[in-house]
Length: 590
Image 1 (tube, rainbow, N blue to C red):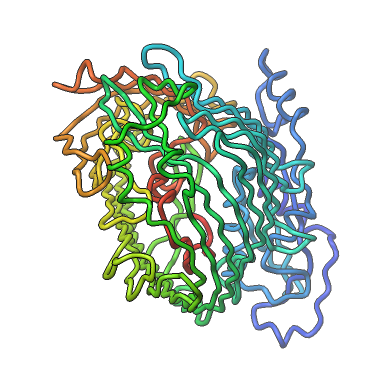
Image 2 (tube, one colour):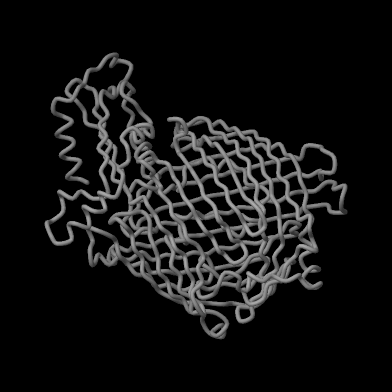
């Protein structure tokens, strides 16, 4: 990329149109030309001639390059604007957040007349993804199959079809997403399909805050989801599941404005949201599954009905929400955190988001007050990168005409601490540590956590050790090999260990698991070389007395599920959340 930058800089400096008017209005000078050089996946001309050259050429031939017009619409500046270094850097970060852009560099070249030529140099990721996620424990277990084009026609359209067979939650459907609706920077997405219970669909338009300088944001969305809530009700050696059919309908209309300067931004917003959730067929619709035979669910026994009944206080409500945010963030670049060699823009500083919601008085709806608080903090004292997050939400019921419930209910809390260590003397190693806790208290909505799985103890399957509260600690040594084809793809290995525990609380089928552990290792692949994405093949074993109650488990996935790349949100908490609204949802992804 540095050689390319030098060549482009010379080309731009020679004879390209300039011309500056009204220079006095721009103390640093005016942008007189913007040159976009959008590379394909590989620069074949810069590669040595060898017998594998055809593979690079074939990858480029099969890939549709991102259109320059798409890239230009993502920039924070246009020809005629004043040259501002912060907008140059912000545009570079915006481009790097796109999943089909491997890397981006944006820089200015001062002209003799005082104007600036700006060069936008990008390289594409491989954007067509065929994903297969499998687990091997006493035989092959297909979890998901998907086909996704993340940059259809080079216009940033994401088109996908998927089949998910995650035990009870089978889904067959598709999704379309564009980050530039009708040539704007608004996002649009629509998705739909079938589940074992019924249908699911969602549609939404969102205008996020653009970079660190955007002043307003908003969203309109609506969704329906008919599916099972899957309770784990057994042990790793004798698995059982209880399936509660649940229908959820959501609607949201929210707008926000932001004040201040980058590094010290305050946001406020107002929204209207409605959520409906019920299981009208309970208890007759409750199903029981033994030994993961999900094709033949049976009517649930009475003891299972009694366990689940305390989490079937379904309700609906329309709420007015007030949103507040305080964002004190700057950026540093780090290489090889979750990727093998890819560059990421780390948000350093703090970000606070608060949502306050009050139910609109309607017949039959409980009179309640909802709140959500999220705190994010990060620091990057080299060679360390430290990221933490804490979030809590719940509702205070003042009066519920249908039940005797009062006080704080549906309280959900979580915290995450991630530490990356990249020592200079071991420059191909990234040591990663994670401590994550989650829990629910006085839950009226369906709620349960488990200890096993991709984001927990990887030597156990997903439904191992149910409970109301959970703590997990993960350690990894991520090693970049630089072999066998460093110009074509990144290859690495990882060694990992997990320790965790669940606590029963008051959720159905919860119990104290005691401390459990697992160890393992695997292969990590990034394609093309320098990619920010990683595919993993992991093999994990339970430790100590847990042997014989799980594993070994072999998992194949197209994502690194632990770390910043996939976000800090816990999927098991997401399925039980009442509030999904907050100022942080409009911020750029990390």
